Picture 1 (cartoon, rainbow over the protein chains, first blue to last red):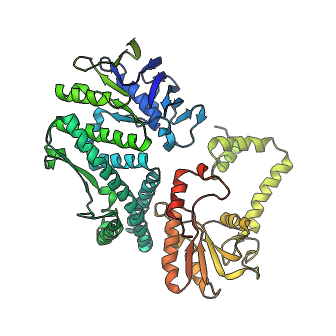
Picture 2: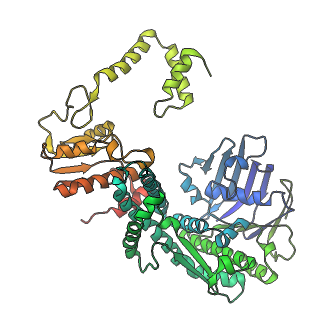
Picture 3: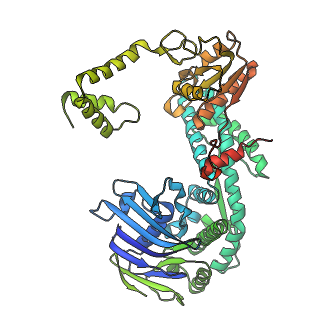
Length: 368
Length: 197
């Protein structure tokens, strides 16, 4: 799939601008604060109906305006597709695919799928467990829509169980339904864990391969699912039993603290490099390479599931890599569908057959 | 903002479920424009429903008499009881014309974050009905969501050991439609809950 042209109206610092893209590499260059990332954010919004860096959609609307529009023409499974995304300052987004309003946000990616790698993704290796849980959960939803519903149910059950535990401090009868919520927590939690393990099993080989390509080092990464409620998960069938036993044994602690202390909501994806924990022991450059290989592995899984390459959006990746890694990444980019990447300068970036889009103050000044 | 009686009416209307401030305003001005007799009829209907309607002493369905029309109907099977969250769910099941047993209205579903536990629902009254009514089977027809499921599990755990059969209505595909129009979540659920033929 690819995007051929994007028209921005009052989106971030763009007043009115149409930008053309070509298959393969598109490099967006410009000084800091000119709108390079904003352009990636707009394309990404067409796929997820959200922003990777703004909590509220109002931040996407140009100062003093009521609504922002992102219009795009492209191809999905070799068929032309037209997208209209409206972002209201008062909150909320509306999207039309080929002029037909989209009913559910979760269907946004059906027309255009993007994979975004941004500097914020360093949190995948460096940040807390919740970043890595979200990473696995989001891929699970991309591969299997039911996984989203299962995770939603798990979160709701968890909130209700915590409600019981909190009420137990003031009401003697509140604990009467705790068994019920435990049973539901095991059922929905097991589904969430199985979805994550499923994603990890498919992600692991391709992430290792991508890491060898991007990092160009023989330091081998390792990925392991860490569950505080089970030292080891031998197979999917054992998940409900293990989870049930752990929830039972931590019950008195849960009641005392008024919160569920053990379960899939506390799990982590441990990332190792050459046998040691990458979060603590890897260098910043190594952590970036690991995060990038995870996103590229996500790209591979989505490509496999959809039968076509998603659009790769790389925000400020090239500048952080040394020459050999940069060339490795460029090779990889040229062999994988359409890519839109940002950089402060073209220097050092292999650009054979790539398009350069120069932006300056929310305007495209050069397009060649 | 308006003042006096109009504002009072807007505020009262916006307390109703599903009515936001804008709809409340529209309704208030609509009432203001209607004939006196129509406005009076509306006011009387509201007063009358509070005055004359009550809840069935046995199943907590809405009723004008001590026992509701289902609990007092001898043709209905008293040993089979369908448990629902709200009285309006009874009407949904009645429309199917497939159920010939009686009902029990819980008045909601277990939801600890909203402060609703078994004590806030008519669950103990259901237990009290089991023996005098000779109930043999209970069908739990609470909503197919997390709270409805929790309520069903709670009731099954409570009543199952007493020798009464407890079942849960299944969820899945709408009948008569095309498979391709079903959303992925419902279709996924239907696959999960498939049955052997």
